[in-house]
Amino acid sequence: MNNKSLVPNENNDAKLAVRQNFATPTVDIFEQDGGLTLMADMPGVSSEQLQVDIDQGVLTLEGVVNDELKGERLFSEFAPSGYYRQFRLPEHLDSDKIDAQLKNGVLTLILPKAEAALPRKIEVKMIH
Amino acid sequence: MNSTNLFRGMETLRREMDAIFGALAQDQETSVAFLPGIGTRRYPRINLNEDADNYYLAASLPGIEVQSLDINLTGNTLALSGERKIEEHEGARWQRQERGCGKFMRTLELPLEVNAGKISAEYRDGMLQVLLPKAESAKPKRISVKLGNS
Image 1 (cartoon, chains in turn red, yellow):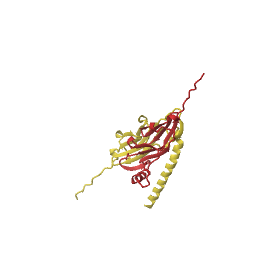
Image 2: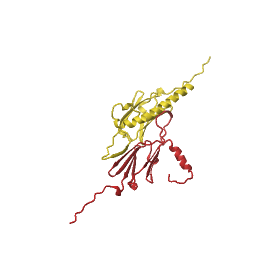
Image 3: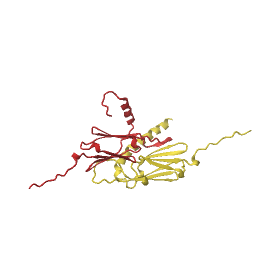
Image 4: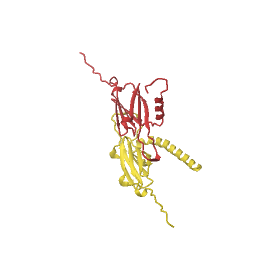
């Protein structure tokens, strides 16, 4: 993804072709005083298969599902192949302190606000 | 041959429509998931496979505590139920809320009898996998034909 050259990259094309079957994970995003929390449902993705990238203010979530069910298909309501979603992040976040956790197929990302963006109380001194 | 193709086409269309409207309905119902009637909702999504000896069931169930999962077999009907707990976040200002929560239940009629004592289930990475061995009585039996002397 970092490759900005105009020469077509076969590796990238292959990636795009794979992503065509990817689902968009459902997410919750909420803001608390300390920062943003993002929770994404990515059932079937293990932590080794999950990638969380931030590049130039764009957060990319990508996960691959490898769980193939044995046997012949009787019926199928979902076809887990992977998840892909991107978000543009606001600028006031501290991207060095982002914390990611994956539990039971739910990714929780905690994106703290940068110190400069936190509300600060300014003490008023009395000068006599 | 033609007629089966026609029905298959209709079936595919019906499924697609169900998927589209089901997804819409699911979005709207997320906030009232605890109300009665959720059993009619198609949640969780499931896949069912089979081979000669077993049925393999996979259900997409992210973010569930294993203790809350309940799998019941009555006759040939498998019932999956559980609850995705509502998470409280103090002072949260929501920007996006797409994930649903609440209780769910889904029943599934299995085509053949299964050996209830040997069912095993595993929950990993938000995916439930259930192994249902077919009952001996339901397996096809090969009957050998002897050549009679005449």
